[in-house]
Length: 123
Image 1 (cartoon, rainbow, N blue to C red):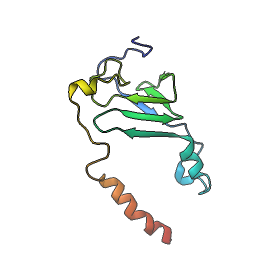
Image 2 (image 1 turned 90 degrees about the vertical axis):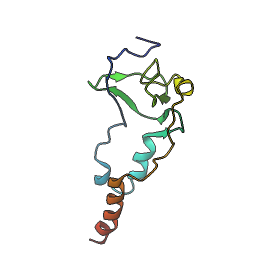
Image 3 (image 1 turned 120 degrees about the vertical axis):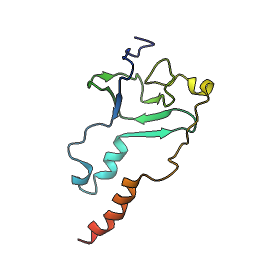
């Protein structure tokens, strides 16, 4: 264990999950959807830096074991060089890591889903 973070073998994948809702968002009454979103986490990719996770979230390893982050706001490493993965230790500054805050182009699946939604509303 390093700095309160359990050691993980190289290549060990981690997942961030939001609190499990009783129903998928699509099955909830429209009044409940904003409340569900408000009760979850916000993940913000910082330009040339980490992913900042704020709010109610669970951090799990690939085997489903929970990792206690010790707080409601954490920084997750994006550069892959942190000594306390999955958490950021600031190494990205020394390593010259570069990444934008937002995608350079929209995800194709997101465009397809957005285009399909108005057609569904007409039914």
